[in-house]
Image (tube, rainbow, N blue to C red):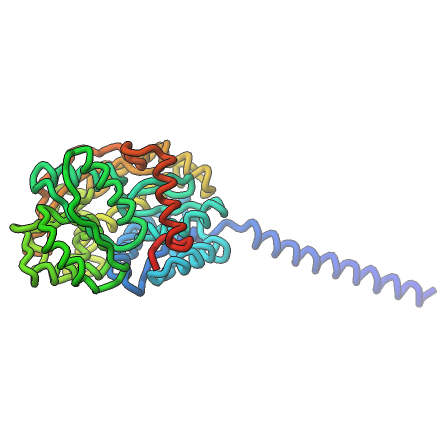
Length: 423
């Protein structure tokens, strides 16, 4: 009897210990699972190496400035934003891999990034697959809409089309088109050719160079032979250095044949030999030189953080206000889910350095300003034309219908071996 009593007592104590241990384990599990998130992760995906690092590193800096400002005011939903920065390496498959890692492994709530349309095109299906959200900060060729991308850069009617019209009215009627050989310049130049045909202008030459290439002798020779009134330039990255230097060596100056660029901003002037570009033109929504307290505060804050010798540019400004608009939408929605944030974005406007911008609900593009600038001797732009109000984005130019534009893009994709840039 005593033995059985002793055994039962041991079993009772073992049961009690088991229940206590199970309770501790379950408690720790529930605390870990349901404990409020200590920070909110966001991804920053840009080229930190390769030919596009020339332009993209500075966009990371502007994105980080916005995150710092938001964190100083209490963060989002009462939590600090934790940025996870990854390198796209100027390589399109790497962009896709890194986007997927940010979403599936790092568990970020949103991604801010991409510069080239080739990088955006390759990550687009990743964001759509995982129902995540990308904020894309660079002017582009349009011909695209996605519920998983918020476009804070300019659509064609906010950059390409008004610049061509201005050139036609002020600089000449004969145009030479030059660009890097990937989807943005190819598509942009199709839009330009349609517009020039409508205006009565003439394209006397069209030439493409590989992205990152410095082999520009052939295009300079062709320009000299064709003698256009205006050059329309959609070269991206550090290839611009070779292009402008060789233009000047050939005796092509802005007084003889001006250049209108779609991808050269203050950051590029900072990195290039700007003396070879003085007097040429660029078109953007934002220039560092525009006047106003909001822009002055933005420029001063950036220089205070990164150095007085630094400059700011349109893609940097679009990246900066994109973070602020996202944070405002999250706070309004009181949610981080893509659908809730997207719904809240429809109500968002922001007093950006370029002026008051807002998200167009139907396309998730941004109402933006249009400005044409002339390159000056101090690595800046003198604004010579201004839309004076924000312009509604139109992603698909009206010269062709949506199906025709989609077919054109698909043709490039197939022609390039199911890539968005020519190998």
